[in-house]
Length: 459
View 1 (cartoon, rainbow, N blue to C red):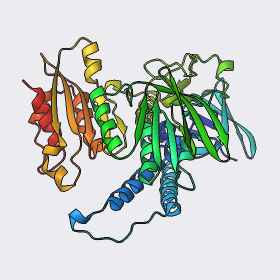
View 2: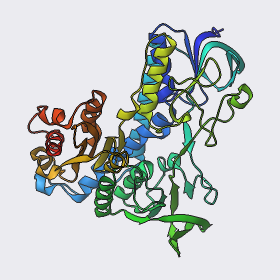
View 3: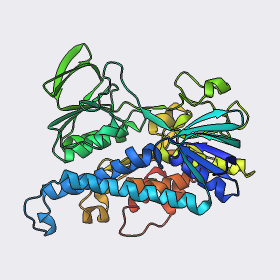
View 4: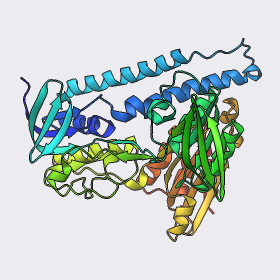
């Protein structure tokens, strides 16, 4: 029989949970990690990783379909094998899942499959073999989030779907309506558009990606339109009717109503924390009206010994934010000074081109009272981008006009998810725009655009 006494029990094996469990074990704590379904959580199994696999495959298909003749590469007719594409995605997921299994084994983390429920100093695990009671000095809640369901558009898993079902469609829809112009809606809309679907994105706000730099979001919208996506902004889905396998969606835009007929409606309006069913109310753990567990700056709840991280707590719902919190909380439990700089957490939209952002947008910096200096440079002016046949987009640097302090960096272009790391590091170290501009970038490289934009922000 497995030992049931631990220093730390983690509920949830997603990015925050498994990283916290692994780090705590590395620091000498005796650790157990519980998950009711699979290692890796939503991100690895039905989120970040499978969506990126499909984005990569669909981008290659789209590019090949457009033709590579100008590269001197001839080809016959390009065909789509969706089953093979999905199989590749699943293989990647399985490989990464086995990697977490190996990590747990190597660091001595005990893993339990089942549903965890907290009690004072203990966690009960209800699994296939019955119930087990684990005792713990520390309990870390890392149960993540689930897609938000609209009351007037309930999920049926076939016609009105969430991001989970959108990753496993058996055929390319002829027409797909996406409700929500955030990262998830744009990424999955891009996948199915590249594979041949007609895609309409319906967004309640007046811009896609609300909260991101307005200029950059508008530029991305223009480029996605060029790829074939259509947008209806300032509009809300009102009702849905299903007949003979087709979906009719009623949409209100201003004082007008319109009907759109499609094969599927993908609802991607956000996610909500998975805080129900953990026994938190009985324990007196503070939860807000959105179902988020309230924590202090250290990740502690109001109940001694119970901590929470990731999508379960207020803040950005990002896998890498959860990972950073998981590491920091594990360090604190081990008596170290773990910390997370929430001002230097990047956000990325994995469309093509990618849009990556860290720090303040121009609008946010201005609203905070800064007199801003803006530096911009287009990828069109970069030799490597031309060699890659990928010249759309730009880098935008936001700095404080008087002190030159870097406030934000926004990258719309090829490999933006990689390039943004320079901006993250610069913010982490309190760099100025001049510091970034004077940093020597390899030539020819896409990163030169970052340096040029930073130099443009310096008077």
